[in-house]
Amino acid sequence: MDKFKIAGGIPLSGELPVSGSKNSALPALAACLLTEEPVTLHRIPKVKDILTMENLLAYTGASVSHDDATVRVEAKSLDRPEAPYEVVKTMRASSLVLGPLVGRTGRARVSMPGGCAIGSRPINLHVSALEQLGATLEQSYGYVEAHAPEGLRGAHIHFDRITVTGTEDVLMAAVLARGETVIRNAAREPEVKDLADLLVKMGAKIEGAGTPIIRVQGVERLHGTDHTIIPDRIEAGTFLLAGAISRGDVLVKDCVPEHVAALAIKMRQAGAEVEEKDGEALRVRCSGRPTAIDVTTEEYPGFATDLQAQYMAWMTTAHGISFVTETIFENRFMHALELARMGANIRIEGRQAIVAGEERLTGAQVLASDLRASASLVLAALVAQGETIIDRVYHMDRGYERIEEKLAGAGARIERI
Ligand code: EPU
Image 1 (cartoon, helix red, strand yellow):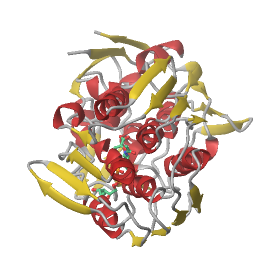
Image 2 (cartoon, rainbow, N blue to C red):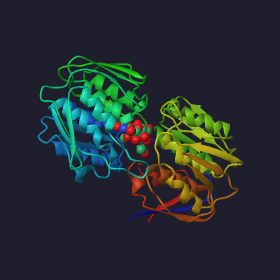
Image 3 (spheres, rainbow, N blue to C red):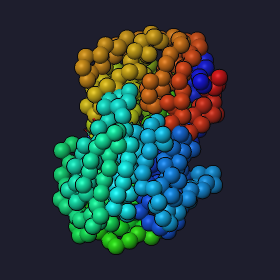
Image 4 (cartoon, rainbow, N blue to C red):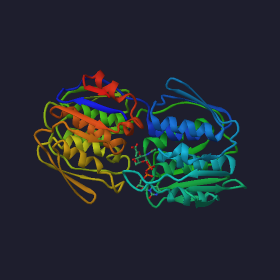
């Protein structure tokens, strides 16, 4: 199993380029199932979750071809509208094909995502919304089966709580449903907006994506198109924190500054200089320890749960005590125990982590438990004294493209062993 070996204490300097968004590319790939015409997607990151999604599309009968960061999908006929356990067991986002498959073919059989290190990951909100669109859903033997032999019909859906992939799933089902669908309490994440932009290019009629109320007028069919995926805001945020924690000076390139505004504000309060460059890059500079600043995760445009672990890593080096509160997932503090092995002082009380900043962290052998937790360990290792060995970096490979090459390009002493 691959590990990272990182020698800490070197301030990063130079450029860190951001890849396309994993969490935008996943629903975009699923959306290709909605038309028999070819769809070409650009800026697709080469990460494990994307390869899994591509395998899944191929399993259903679509043809998928690559040319570097461009992927072309042609779903002429879908002989097997299924997502089997063997293909999706490592990826929670498998439920994203439920909506498009049932919308296009009237049936779907999808392996249920199990729990994972950050929480239970239920899909009850996806299921109930699809039922409101007229599908019959049954859960058995670890699968959810959906049937809508007469096709789906528009409905008024109100999500009990905000769900990102739930909103995306239902949006993809609604575009081919008869009549109007209104989705209330919809997720406002940029990835939802990006998906809606793609669907509109394919001929869908959607208004309000990016706001809590999305209106969809169903159409008979969608057609092929070309689309470029938005930059990965979580990778951009991780790089901003890499620049700051290493006490360096870094240009985070090819990002959308507005998408990381909540993080940038906290970073400035904590003492980092974060400066926007031409609307598509951010320069971060930080010469010493930050000041402790509290953070509470929220749905977009609030502070992203996917940046909580990385922010906490920075706060372990702060002057003072900060409170990091996680409101989205019930168990997203696994990184705290590993950070403690590097000398961090963190106490967990329910959904709150109390982080007392330390003058220095020290290198250690640590274990990555999930994607963003592994990123937080890499960040801590950049500032720690001595050498850190991070085990199970396959978690990192699920969502960060060539992370070690990118960090090494800005001076980090990191190698994959
Ligand atoms: N929830 C339910 N029922 C559902 C769906 C969600 O109770 O049917 C709960 C979840 O358990 C969670 C909350 O609602 O407590 C929010 O979950 P959401 O559905 O928004 O999460 P998701 O769509 O499964 C996406 C991202 C995650 C990111 C979250 C929150 C993708 C593929 N995944 O997950 O990304 O953390 O939104 O922003 O878009 C990551 O990239 O590391 C990652 C975990």
